[in-house]
Length: 528
Image (tube, rainbow, N blue to C red; front, top):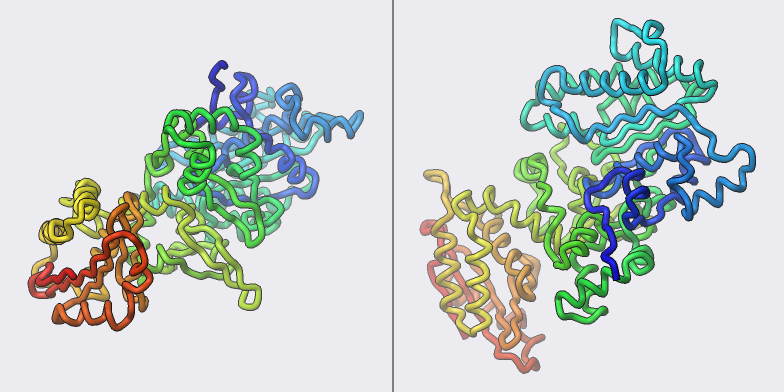
């Protein structure tokens, strides 16, 4: 059987359809959007198919019906009779690429899009000339309407890229980019008579960007149940469209189809963007896994935004809270304020937290890390900031630590843990406290172990601090700071932490470990 083409990283609907790449039909959503309203905003994480969706909308409004053969929207268009495949003038701003740190970067990008549109539709350049870029945009829309006799479609993909890419590295330029937006897109405010459809996408919805104050007609569908599957790949879409790829990766990995599906789900599924919406897989990671026939962390290979790490460092949110789950209101999740110290909305909008429950009484969303790719990718990205840049090889050290546990050698494990902490640099005169840096470091080390074996970490929750299960052994750990080792062992017995595992055939170890503030490392331990 000839190998099928998978559109990994391809954002052009035209290219996918013309070159016969596998395409998951999302045109039902396109039909609903374009025939139920005028102006929309959609927030989704990076690499989730936003650009492909915008490209699909552009092709649809451009009347390229040949690209839609066999898709849902073809049948719906046939029902329109003479009004089928009406062509509209389109201005499409794809903003994911560009140097937005340079003074004229964003202005040049917007201006270039307008120039391309002017040339494509052979507009009279003299009638469009203007002293300012916003007026040029306004004149272009009016000229398109006058020449074609049809309303104009405005598509803006990744509107927030010029802001996110400058927020940390160049805040002065970020403010200038924000000001440019204020004048540019605000011209759409009172132009309903000239507009057929307006669609914005982005990772983050900045409440102080005037797009959302001036353009209050934009309907935010980011948490709408009806559009929850508009980006990403649902379980049904996976099973309907990728059966050959499922078989291929299962054969390559030497596992059953059932095991393969379970692994795909554990690694790449789990995203929910509304309280009752359908769950989706990360499309970039899923397609990359099929292409490489391996279960790697592909999404994280494209980079973790620095702003996330900085926001977490500046907040009071702890690592256990991130991994165990947090809560937020809908208003908090939809609107992001740069000055807000609460990182939860940003973590949600960027795909590092996802909806896992909803309390209708208090209108509260429960959020968690969606899958193992996100969990361990995120934890690994914290190593330089939490454990120090010298500990970049920690994943390797952790694997050796787990090899010790798999061999039944807990003393060697503790020696390696001691070495890890000895390599962590601390500011002179500043010793970590349990509730602060020390607990973050220990929690990160233990959590990262879960990437390689069954490891449950519950710091200060009334349960054993850590339980590690290997094929032959079970380890119940209790950690103390500046306390006698007997306190750790006594707590394991008094709280019955080991009782759930007594009937297990594997050898059970109870281990107490004491850290000393003055030493900044392990000072004592006991194994029983």
